[in-house]
Length: 456
Image (cartoon, rainbow, N blue to C red; front, side, top):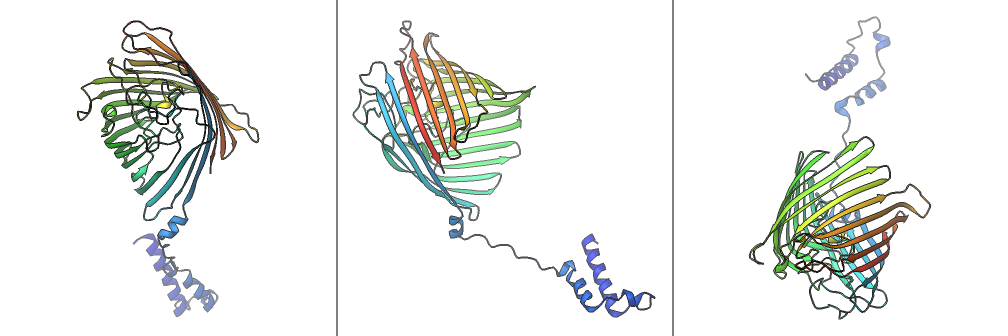
């Protein structure tokens, strides 16, 4: 008999014997007998008689909506661009606002709706254009490109079903960020975010995690001007063996009916990890991928990508050495149409390829070194600061010729827990001449930004 049942039976038996006088023959029976009030207390203390609170009813739809959270963001930004070969300097002052609501859970389902508005403040002294693709979308071809056009749109509208920690399904217009966004991201640097009309499934079992996304529409960074109709599939599987080693395989099959130049299939593998060597934390990434034509959208091609980095962090300092090789065949280069490309190959965003992607028809080799410092100083209205310095050296992958170099500088800090400031600078300098047979690199340019961001 279980312990709880034995205890219950024992308490009941003692109560019964006491109430019937079974202990009266004992010399101590009179003193042992308990008054009626004590008997009642003993009976109330019986575990089988303790009342059990009924489970709380699940929330109604209206309660789940009311238990949600507000989404409110605003980012004001000034951007200036000076590009060799253009008659005018580009300047843009823009304000991006996002407003939305995410509900609480109702039967493991959450809903989210978010609107986004981008407004120009002041004169329109900049060009809006798909890089590498004519014509200008706002009639300003003599100005540098600053792709932050006015737009008001539904940014996200999604349902999320999370029946457990090992499964999540999201359907609707959503943000998709895969890994470091090298192949798929939201292009969060531009004011109009890239989102996806998609079905996403994330599943996990032990050390394995799998992600599958089917995309029907890509809401790109130029409002409704240049969205892509899609029949694309994204999949990756990750095996987290231990902190020093994580392995991943991925396939990204992109099919865009109204942008065949950007249709391709990329298949690859990645290894990454972290470990400690004394007081220094080391982190590394190594990726290889092959990109090919897909569904007959372009002439046949096969181009390879190889990339890797190693970083060491000691105290407030991080140093990272990175290398990327994007193969080119003289007609087109390896591209990542859905990536957050601003984070790669320089913040000046100088490299473009047919279709508006970052790349180079001869292919590109990028060796870069980064230093990040996170000072400890804290003031009432200035804290969590971070300073970044990066240097890029670009070579032609096909011919090996020197093409260009670039310096990147950035400083960020929090002013309050909800308000942050950013100052950023990029200086891209091409070689004055390149050997015969080497594709000409893009024009030299400098860019500067100042932004102030609020998040509720």
